Amino acid sequence: MTDTENNSCRLCLVTPPGVTPDAFAATLDEALSGGDVASLFITGDPASIAALAKAAVPVAQAHGVAAIVVNDTQLAGHARADGVHIDSGRADLAAAIGSFRPARMVGAGGVRSRHDAMTAGEVDPDYVFFGRLDGDTGPEIFDKTLDLAAWWAGLFQIPAIVMGGASIDSVVEARDAGVEFVALRRAVWDHPQGPAEAVRQANARLAAATEEAQ
Image (cartoon, rainbow, N blue to C red; front, side, top):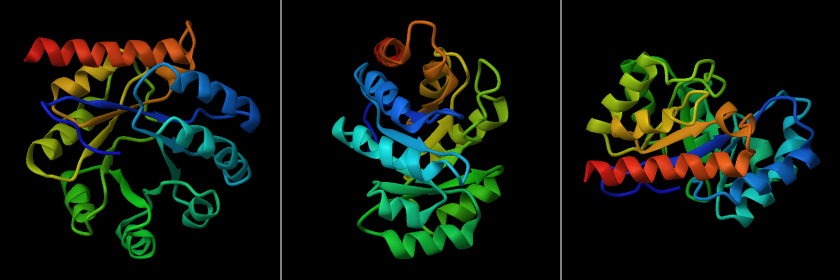
């Protein structure tokens, strides 16, 4: 997962809740056929996340998408994921970086303030994620979340990822704020025309916004 040039923004996906792993693998394959996706965040309860990772990681990787397991470093290794997302504090983040680098990426979540972001940044994660992975409760990105992500993206080299809203249109908010990556969940998996069309529309909005700004 790499940054892009010319103030563009790339799409990330977050797994939905309550899915059957095998069924989700087919849904994910469909979604990723819709266009560019940088990464997939694999999250779930302890009883289901291992099976979900086993089903989702190879599908994501077959599409050139980085598969990132949330908080479980052991599972990330067993599932041969591309990285791990740590939102449980600086100590856990530093430990994961010490264990996983350079073979896998390690990203920081759980950021609620500028202080949190700078504390995470001190241990040099591969990205800093702003917002909750299930934070798409409204159509737009939360103002505080977007403000934090925009502040970070404007000052630091470590890429920012911001949790998008439940509307596809929220990707334009992220791009216009200069954030390098925007993550979607409900906007893709609950899209009335299906996840592939949602990914197509999200990328089309990002491309149009970037072209308009040039």
